Length: 304
Image (cartoon, rainbow, N blue to C red; front, side, top):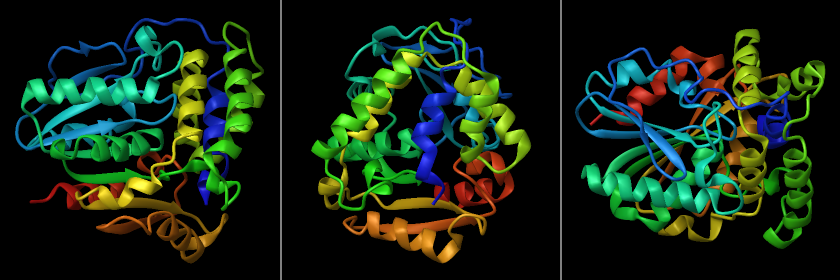
């Protein structure tokens, strides 16, 4: 269960000697794209033409996390690459303070409505996966199907299977305050490297992770982290009519395939239509650790 330290590590990594960087500092997608559209909580870059696919990155991650799949996907799909304001060196915009997740959903809902892009296929990684579930719950007409990449409908169960939102609040608040307090303060790169080690298995993946997390504004990471840890999407899973594909990375060095898939199956037991696509020898950033296998699963997901 590679999620065991995911939020903790991503949050800690985002405090690495942070200072504002030029907008869109992350590596750009190498495919013809429209100009970036900036909204209060997110920015969006549009690629290609065809059925709509929305790609949502996770905590402290840029849209560049999808660089390995977006250009190919854009050959026969209209791809909407989302980035949370405050990540990848972007200005935080309206994300300073609470309401990050609701703000992302509101911006995305309004944008897709103006684009007449629904119903869209929505792919979300980590926090982006939770956001995708919430979007499908609140705006079912805009979502045709969901791919949830290594995300849970309620994260604290990774620490306590009987956890509740109320029990999670004090821990989430402590983590939020600790991450936010790091704003403008240099951190030990060795500590950051140790923190991101749980996020991926391949050395090249870890290098990218460190760079991406370091570019995120700790204040935004802190607020998003708190909201992620105190949002329970399980009660409304049964209301999601769109089919859900959950991508589950696993490795023999952690819990192995059987235990990992069984854990995720329990967490999504309330979903009406769900299937699981497991990818071995991969950490949380499965699209970096196993790019070919992930691309194949994504190809299957978007197939008519």
